[in-house]
Length: 198
Image 1 (cartoon, rainbow, N blue to C red):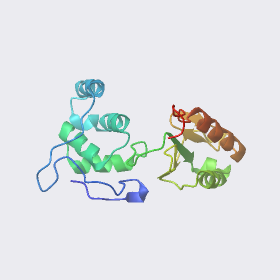
Image 2: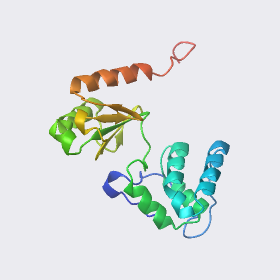
Image 3: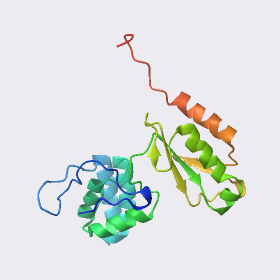
Image 4: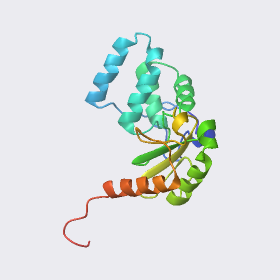
């Protein structure tokens, strides 16, 4: 099974057992793909007769299904693809798009590569850390935002750039970031409870 590694703050939160069959033999898997995701998985297997070739697409499915790649989710993928756990772990920890921690509702990625850095990404990252009260690899206490530094968002001509979930935002400034965060908070606010104070 996977050790409790924390490579570059990207691997595992300190919570719960690994799940799946542990190396001591025992408990059964508790995760399973939904019927919709299972259908997608079966299409992947048909498309990639070599199961190792289906690893990255299957890990992406697992992230979308389970929210992030916990040790249990990685063990599940290894079992379903019949590939070594070490191969799943090495692949999952190489790619930043394969999240190994729970994310906020709005996952903010700040490009820290050369073009963005030269145009102020370090100041933008500092502003976001101050504004949200979290660092890279962390989630706000309300679960609304998570923050991550990434190497390249392929927006060098419109640097500095950030990505929030699947949406790109370019030519960013602290003022633009503030407006965007305020908009996301307004549109993501939980519905008021009915029946008055409880």
